Length: 379
Image 1 (cartoon, rainbow, N blue to C red):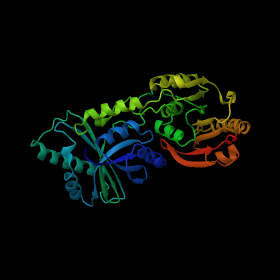
Image 2 (cartoon, helix red, strand yellow):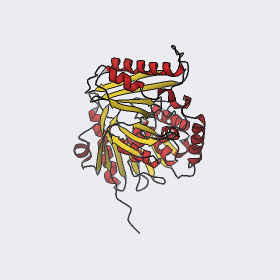
Image 3 (cartoon, helix red, strand yellow):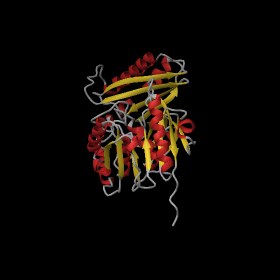
Image 4 (tube, rainbow, N blue to C red):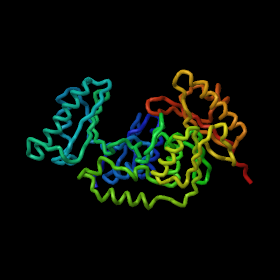
């Protein structure tokens, strides 16, 4: 199989999590930068990384990287890339682009040049002047940063956060990739009780259950590269079968999700059923004031309301006050919470977090606060 340079794109702040996931899949990481991790693989790696990466946004094939100070340079260097190895004669392709701190600053012009150069290369390869574009789809991206062009092919199609289980939604849902990262950055593991008292449509409990059961997040969806002749179809069958065989249905998973809104809990139950993990999550309609910790050493992972609109901040502060009381009364519990509130630690919760990490929930900058509970006493 051909050696490929692949790029997993990620939300700012999640690079280290995605890097660890890639290494756990057995692939060599070449470089970790802002919002992207470059790694070595082959055609099977394209399949495996799409199926298994929980916190990445997309998996791209890096076709080339070069300096481009003129449109002629961009045209010729793009044309020199092996497009015929990827795009068949009936292939349909779209070019997207970005340009930052580069001489070639007009993105539409760059896109047009790249498209034209690929067409010229394919004309020479297939000895024709017209392409039907009725076959598999390809999204090509030209990224210009400080006059350096990177040309990539998007193997994922829809973003990897679209697992396929979200059949019902609520307002302001947390992204699946961020929810999975929150779980992986916590000390939660099989056998330990996990509670999300602001579960909304169930994303955090569902992602935790998928992790606990070792269910590949991309198992029930399709990817752009499944239609590409360059990625043999038997690889998708083999890797899907391997992923099914890897599921641990005997894992002891104990997760509770609750929310004050009946519609949210109903949505969460339907989504968990679609994800195939409804048997290991208990969902309840319950305000935070009624939440009880019935055992020690549990973990709360939560994405409470942010109160971005005027008049909501007081209600949010009441929620935080209730949280503070809960954790003062239950010192063995650990709290992992994401919020836009910069004053959460001292003003609201009354003590600094053991760890904090800047992340993004969509376009909102948030902080992931981590409070570790007391450890079990050794016998």
